[in-house]
Length: 481
Image (cartoon, rainbow, N blue to C red; front, side, top):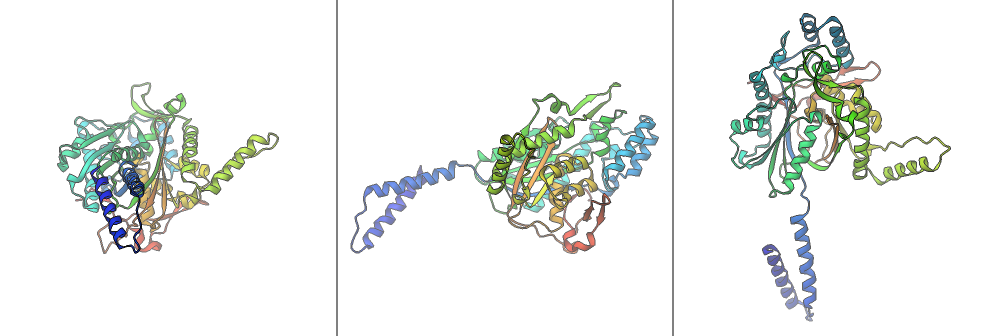
């Protein structure tokens, strides 16, 4: 109210000065002053109490050391030598590895690099430190933020819950302030990264303007290793790899690179098939693993459809909405005619797409469901090819890939799509406010991410790094000293 009173006083003084300077003088009715005061008070209240715009200041992705590389040949050799796995299981692993089209540049934590992997509490903590600390260091270096400016810390992981928590481990390492708000999310699997973005956005709405939230997304895969022969549980061993991402969100636009435009969550856990399609359980011998059901793709399609129905009206242009309505009405009214559903053109609403890289089948399903081109899904396919299934952090690696190819321009829009246990489908829309300058290796000692194009005819990747120039490089976090 003090601000409103001060504004009213200034306006009254301005009107008084204007009244004295007018020739001939014009009488100003007090009602006019009252109307102006009400308008100013309404505008001030809206700015103070209305929804705050949330920005992504910057993000960083984790890149393991080269000695953690786990080639397909090494995987198969360990499978052959393992006393835990039978011949049929080894053949199944070989088939999935071949069909997955993963590269030999994927990484696993040290605990899984043995013929008979073992991951105790100490090994799991070491894996967490190996991922979390370098990626936060890189984010802090990029943003230059004072650690005391961080008011909230949000972390997400699914399969490793230590005491103290990973959030406490971060606070201890970086000596964050004592009144820090901490939120730990677990059990949400691959959709959790976008869930944490939504949670951070909601918390920023009730915090002072300019507050900052640090979000860390990772999975500690060592404790989740499955030591059995159940094929539905072996898929996690074959596809899951090390990953991590750190993000800094704020309501201040200063130094921010992305603006959050919308976030939509769809939860289908009320359906039994959806609830159990990604399920941690024991096999007949008591081995704990994550079982992926045969209904997974159908459940994912239904969840995506429900999410897009809610997201479409928020992002699609009017022409696409009218076409969708026309086809919907025609299908209802023309009983004797077969009218197929109209798939809106989401490329009119977004220039880039970051689809959870759960596997080739997931990416292809989303591509067909949204009628996207091969270029639109290239970041997702390339991320899976290069790094494997990186779970909740995969969409951030895809964003880094788009920037590495120099395709991100100011004003471009990005749609992130995440899937996870429950079953959940989350989407987030971003608008680029500042495009990143990609330094060359001479300008900055960077790690090289090869840039490759998808050849639909051969089903293989072609390395085009040499054709992309400096845009083929991007600075990512590294655990190298």
